[in-house]
Image 1 (cartoon, rainbow, N blue to C red):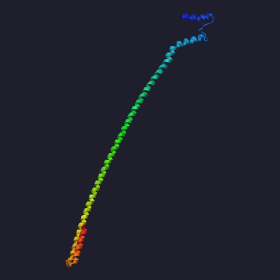
Image 2 (spheres, rainbow, N blue to C red):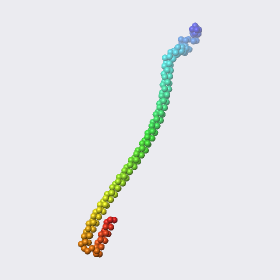
Image 3 (cartoon, rainbow, N blue to C red):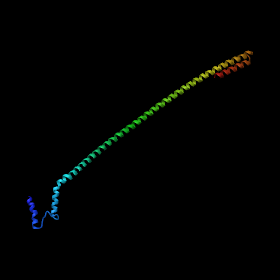
Image 4 (cartoon, helix red, strand yellow):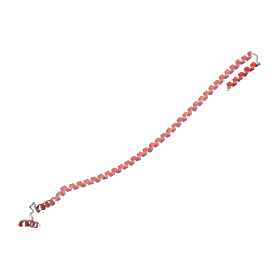
Length: 184
């Protein structure tokens, strides 16, 4: 095979024209460029394209992992958001319950205070009525004592004079009227 190529290459050189593989300005430059390229291609593939391909594949894998991680983070965020919204709803319900309980307790305390105030007012009223009754009884006793004193004075005045006269009747009548007025 090498002999065939050598004949092909040497034949036009012998005739004085044609294909000269060593002439860089003609077809020889193109031929050697292709030969060098084809010989260097496996080396370039191994040294340059392999690492580039591996780097691109690694980048694609990292991008895919980043997408998966972002998707997972989005799902976690959505789950956390739902959980937070649930806890906020629970907190609102709990605060509404606490407010309702506080209102009930305040109402109960208010009722208790009003009941205690009414009871104190009733006791104070009863005490005042008892004090009034006691003072009335004292006043009536004092008036009775005074009536007795007046009766005694009146009797002395009547006894010092003649009993049975018009003047005596008028005096006793006046005293009885005074006693009726005092007892009312």
